[in-house]
Image 1 (cartoon, rainbow, N blue to C red):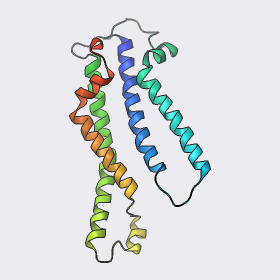
Image 2 (cartoon, helix red, strand yellow; image 1 turned 120 degrees about the vertical axis):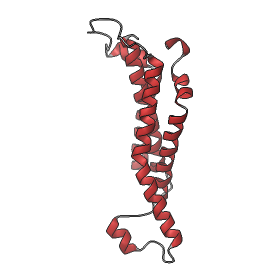
Image 3 (cartoon, one colour; image 1 turned 180 degrees about the horizontal axis):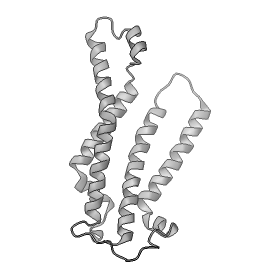
Image 4 (cartoon, one colour; image 1 turned 180 degrees about the vertical axis):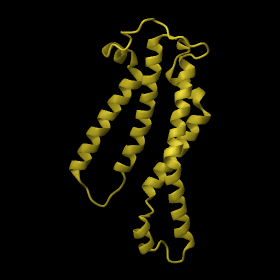
Length: 174
């Protein structure tokens, strides 16, 4: 594997993470609210456009980024010695790590919201306001759905990492 291939895979892994993080950061910001604030809408849209641009550059313009930042310069040899590791294997490893990170980051929050929803359904009085204020526990359906989707996407990434890597790395770059 060449050093350019290594940088290409690392940049694409960051691009996939940026894309997934972008999706789950902006879904709650565009949820239904009782008031309309045009300033926050404009800031959210500008932030969304910048993040989409960064994700596009990281995923589909990796060679230009490598040339722009001159990442291949300054190495003693052209090739990086790896016996059994190629670009596809490294990308697969990155997808597995990203899937695990998504699950680990969101499973506690998701289970907490499941517990609160169960408590709300079972208790005849619902959630006590005193208990909720003391424990800072509120049932927020938007974040419950977002954390559940993050766990689901992480599981999908873990189980289908080979198919995902085929989308981003061509057969000639193995």
